[in-house]
Image 1 (cartoon, rainbow, N blue to C red):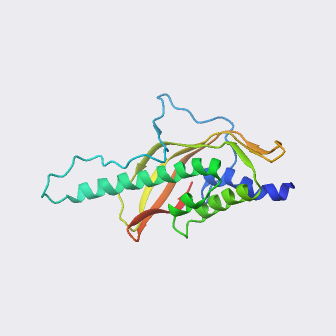
Image 2: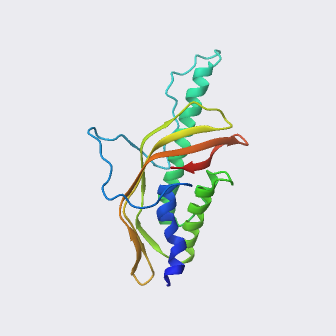
Image 3: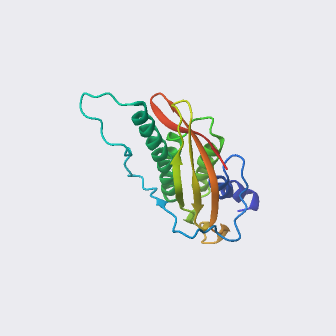
Amino acid sequence: MTARQVAGAVALLAVAVAGCSGSATPSATPTTTATPPQTVSTSATAQTTSPTAPTPSGASATPLDAQAALQAEAVETVKKFYAAWNDALVTRDSRPLTALALPECESCALIAADIDTIAKKRLRVVGGQITLLRVRADPGADQGIPVQGELVRAAIQLIDASGKVTRSAEEDTAPGMLWILERRDGVLKIREINR
């Protein structure tokens, strides 16, 4: 396999961390803080929960309740996207990723295309899982709700059918990630990813 053939598959190493406008240069030293970071599960079976108390039966939800529910749903959608990423590294199936993104999300489309290239080239991926840290949604509306957080991609290797490592990258951290989500046809999806 030539370097050109692998280049497309390797883009996923950068896109997941860099977003639409960031740099994919791996950090020389991972970012650390004095307090342990709060990790966010990227399990595909994670449940959406609202941070507010349930509304009593018959009572109408307040605007604050609706906003809190929207923010919780937005955070959960971002978590599901990266759970789908983690699964796609093994299954090489980009459809679950595509289902969580709007067509105009360029970074999402590149990530899905890279998973498809990995499948086409029959590459095996070792590592590369995404962990999200300090993810929170800001107030927004169905037409656009921002989610901010930090993304950490584990060290990754792409291995061809002969067992040769064709590409690798060290762990990479992307602080200051911004996901913009939008509801269409009743479903909240990622519209853009920025760093």
